[in-house]
Length: 223
Image 1 (spheres, rainbow, N blue to C red):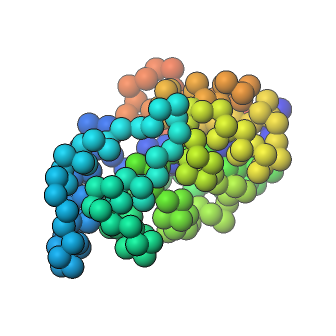
Image 2: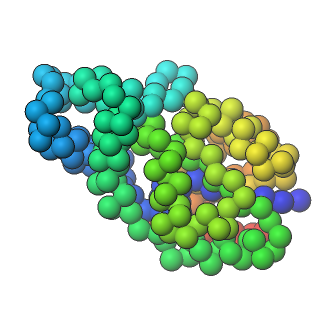
């Protein structure tokens, strides 16, 4: 019996960018940081060489935090400055965002049915979870959520089983009583199923015949 439904964020609940679009988004994010640092006269050498060196995940799904990447790229180590750079880095990404119309009605209905609702999500370049909490609040989602866990909170990215185990411990539910909904089979199917959690893929573009195409389809599946 399903007692909790957990979701990925990007391109499941909120639209951001495709993998093909990310290089352009990354360039905008870095330029945001560069423009800020230029006003302070704090530009180090070989910026773009360092950027492309950092444009990868860490071995074994370990999180490589955004603060550490930016510290190396820009040779900045003050905490306040790194926090500012993180904000600037994420601004182009958040500016592209748009919540899907079916998200709030679906989550509200799940709560009315007595189900717990949570989030398990990776973040671009391991950016801070505080920024994503603000993003969830901006779209009015936190009032419906029993828990939200981002990879940087745990130190491991999906599909690592540790992020799913951590999220379930916060919800107080067993894996077999939970359903995970996400858009990427590499992270959102292999990960939850590795600990015995059911999973459903969502394909907002309607290309995958084995996926749902609207979030509210899970309401009928759970009925």
